Image (cartoon, rainbow over all chains, first blue to last red):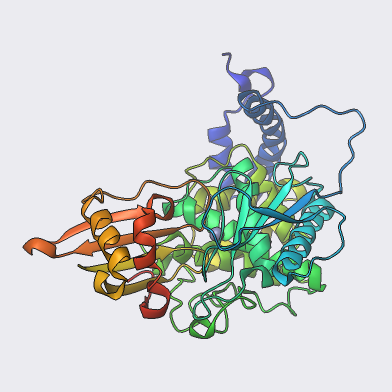
Length: 346
Length: 99
Ligand SMILES: [Zn+2]
């Protein structure tokens, strides 16, 4: 392989990054502009390189997107990992089963959000069918993504969780785990695992806000408020105030509270709160700027499966600069968000 | 046979703990569960399951005088243990997941 930078660049990117961090404002801005430009070239190259490593995406000359392909199944309380009885396919009238209809509607709302805001056609960006498996297990207090194209929903145990299909943010959360698998494929432990969880909450809450027409100030920023049982009321997690969602919530809100070796659902409070700060600092809808910056970072080939919070934070700042400018409100808000949770950017 | 079971992970991210006894099961289920418990791959951590938000179970027994642990992802749980684990929702106490 030849050195890619030699083709168009005099300064090595390492020096540009050092200049970009220096205190001299004029020098810093010049370096940032050069980096933004150079970043676009390198991004395009990295994207094409990354695609060579994956299966090629289907080439179509008349791409038709915007239409989900949903199938909702009844697992009839078994713990089988394969789809059970088909209850409702795309375009069919509602079933008599409320969980089936909630899964159908929630997956539809999530598809619409990704398509309308990001022009992403389903989980894989290439119209992958959406398969929702309801009534999984007996009193199963959980919903999960199986890594093989299926979203499973339990009926809840009535103590911790109730019917999990009732949470549109939960459905958005699970579908986003599929999106993550097809993008950065963040490893599900340590900081990359907590990022995986956080990104699922970040897009899950936006799916709910989008469906309800909520702006950043009218949203409660609670995850799972519609699926918690009496022990975990009022919600599973709070992006606004991590650690306060229920009596057992011990999510940290910043790096001072980071739990080494903690469950991925614990430390996700840190990047969750960063997103909350960015979105509420900017106002309007979360998907106006904060959501697209997070989405661009998730889809960036430089986000590696073992990414740390800092790696992710730096990619969000770079996308904010490239899209909105180095001295834009959006870039400042992203920097403030990471500062608020004490994730260093350099 | 008495075991201490902790379920971790899942969308909610809370840990649920209970001390369960195969004597709580019907005789047939208890015999099958005890055989399954004796054959667990003791002193091993759970395989990392694919996907996200799945449960993991930690099982601890002090049977025979010394304490032994095993961690199982929910896809690794033997069917014969499911009736015992089904007692967890009603008997389990929530623990903070970081604890
Ligand atoms: Zn999750």
